[in-house]
Each structure stands twice: as C-alpha cells, then as structure tokens.
Image (tube, rainbow, N blue to C red; front, top):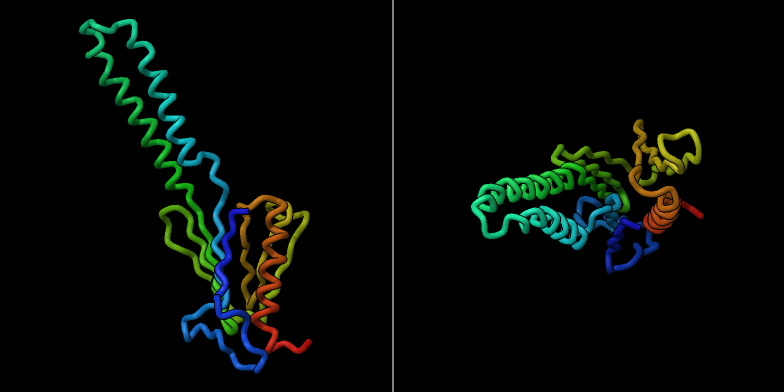
Length: 184
C-alpha cells in the first residue's frame, strides 16, 4: 500500500490526561504520507528509453557508413529526447501526495497535486469522524474525514481495498492519541 506511517518513537501518550503531543510543541504523534501507485518505475523508465533508443537506431543500420546516417541521426536523437521529456513532464505533473499529521489536539491534512500549491485542512481530532462510502461516491470505498464544518476526502487515488485499511489505521491512531481524553 502506498501509505507510510511515521509514529513518534516515544510511544502512545501517557494516560494522565495531559496533552503530551500538542501541535504547539511541534512533535506529532503520527504522520501518514500517501501517494498514488506509479505504473512506470525508475527501472522501467530506463528499460523503456533503452528499448526506444534501440528501435530508433535500428533503421540507421541500413545507412551505416553513408552520409545519410549523419542526416538522420539528429532527428532520431531529437525524437528520443522528446519522448524522454514528455514522460518526465507527465510524471512531474501527475505527482500527488497527501500528508496527514496527527497531534493529540490538532490534525492537519495537506493535499499536494503536481506543481499546484498545497491545499491544507486542519481540525481538532476530538471532533473528527471517518466515513467509508461503499457505493455512491466518486470511487468505491470513498474515504472522507468530517471535522468542524468541512468534509475532506482522503486517499481517493488509492485502490478500493487500500482505503478501508487506511481507515482502520487512522481510527486506531485516533483512538490511541485520544484515549486520555475520551472516556471508555
């Protein structure tokens, strides 16, 4: 699953009722970084560019040793450079990332899409509720966070099976960080 949780090594907050993981101290209890699946890995990119270069150079074998080779070579290299640039530009523009940061008294969700400015949502985790809309949402198992007057989506680019697992992880971390506050 393209979700990486970073839990504070200090462990869960003490059950003394004190807010030991306050956003004012700067030490979050948990941070989750989410990103979409990448269909073209760096290794796959190298293989694709190498295969494309080999296929582009194949017609040059027929004109090897003639001046026509030097006339065709710049155009084939330019075409290879254009393919390289187009793939890299597409990967840069399609980069998405969501970062969910959880303190005992504050939660922040930051959506970063491509080169656009980040969209940030924050709330008090005590008032947060998660909902998994199995049907009728934009995607199956649509995960949303409700807090305050706003509702935000979380991990819409994840697969149908990854969103329920993310919800379970998030609820477990919310329960841990809020256990001194919420009575059992």
